[in-house]
Length: 275
Image (cartoon, rainbow, N blue to C red; front, side, top):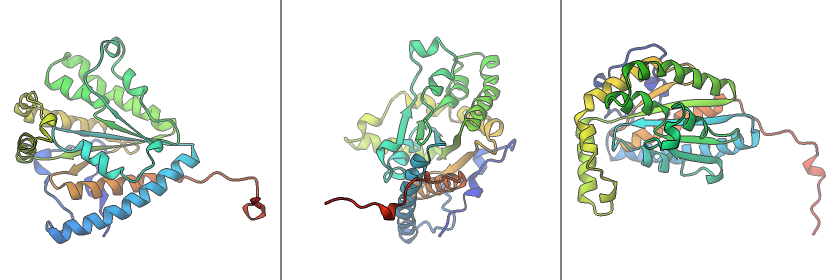
């Protein structure tokens, strides 16, 4: 069963209302043990295909892929990375997590630290949070004036256009969960000693700002989803379905890049390996 990825893409300049989108959506997979097993079986095949395509990307060496993951707390960015990229050669992918800017980073423009982490050609780069924090948390918590953050949408679009023209394909995912799902995941972290470390009491303050964050994300989708750097809003309450959608988008994206293995200057059949 193939996932219809076009159902989750944000068309350029379109208006998005997250409250109208179902984070429990499972597409054509029934929300049952049978449906989950079918998704698990499909994901195994997708992971194998991604491994092959990553090898081709590396061998081709003319393009790069940048994957941006954004979400509210506990939506599953880390587990998405672990599962979807589990079959890829670690040498071919680099994950970068963006925390609060350092004093050095604050001395530069907001994109300076981002540009330094863009994947080189032949590589997949995964951003766990990204340059979009500077129109999300910065906006919601009033870290800078509206005049400052409101100009950043255009700056981000220009930055992504530069990357695209330089050979980096960009695909961006928002992991969409609802407030009840977040509550359950927080409670799981509190009730499991092996996950206590993942719980941050400070996240409760962000939870109070849920609607403000949704408004900020909706503006991001409206202003910064383009043909060459699209946003996908992924229903993420069901982790097993989240993974197959993202894996399928990545497969389709890599296949669209028309990658090729390098030509060789010799006839392999003429080569004899000495004993």
